[in-house]
Length: 108
Length: 416
Image (cartoon, rainbow over all chains, first blue to last red; front, side, top):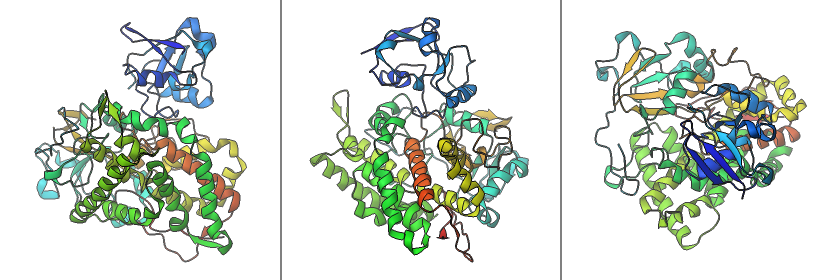
């Protein structure tokens, strides 16, 4: 299973396996990780699974994949950066094995 | 306060206040209103006009006094987001209006369980109702929608609420739960008594009736497991330990109440609007690729319910002091008409930039069935408009709204 590293705002790292086809928001919730809420359940309706894709992975996963995701990113609580994503829209593939995402200070 | 979901205890500190004689001292006199939400003639004449008008006619936060209970009322999008996302101030304890027997108490699960414990319950349901999960139901919902239409299309008329608006979501829900379809009419009559009687004795009696049925249903699933939600809940395990009887009961009961009436009311609202707006109907037909935005915008302008909370510790909203124990209601349909977030709020605009809408609330307790509801509405629009693109309200028919916690017209008689 591909692995994802979630880096909390205070620097704490969590490495967990996330199944292919599963999304990065769900990977955090399934493993009880703090820092991602995902209150709408992955439907591009809430902006509470905001993450910053690590610069190393910017080319593979650092750009929103739909107009809805770009628009919804305007509703995040923490500031937007160049690689801001909604983690429910990052679906795991073997090519993303080792992905690193940084979590914002707050989702609300 | 931390509660033990397996051993429910009725809260003893709940204060419900009714009427002008029961206004606490900390409420400023100039913020007291009797707004008539859900029952005044002005409200019932056109609820959605009333919701939009609240931003002009009433303060953003006020203390509403009325026969169904006194509570702070909030209509700003920003305030509702704050309240629904900060359970440390706005708790879900005693936040539902359904009267339970204190001697045989149970919690509504997961809404009355604080994070992070609530997550273990959501994890049972989430895979089935996630955006990807509900797609597994798509074919079946589409087939059901067409079977329903087959039954009445040649008549050239129908009572929309009875032959489509009601059976579509309720039958989908019963399938999902693993409960028998032939109980549809019985379940609906229970839902009506619970949600629309506005009588606490009838509500309590009905909740007992529903509970007796669900206890039998859960026992049946324990003996005969299947793929439905009732069975999954009955067989759920946390850390290797089987879910307790009280937890399973509170979870199934809450799903039952939540699943029967809301999409029904939503479809009735939407079809009434579609019938009266032929140009906009055509716009939906002409832009099939924009269906998701169309569904979202219709959900924004036709949200059907409210979200209640109890103040857990003293807090201030827009300079208004709220004290522990106060009741607070976010008027979700009004929040969706907040002009600060949705310019020209009453205009139905399928090309609005995507924003957070409050149809399903927000926060960790936001609606589990939101994506199922979205899919049902999408399929209903697509299949109906494909087969009955042109229709109107039966001339001479009067649109009637009755008081209740879920907003929608009593009937939607259509002709084509």
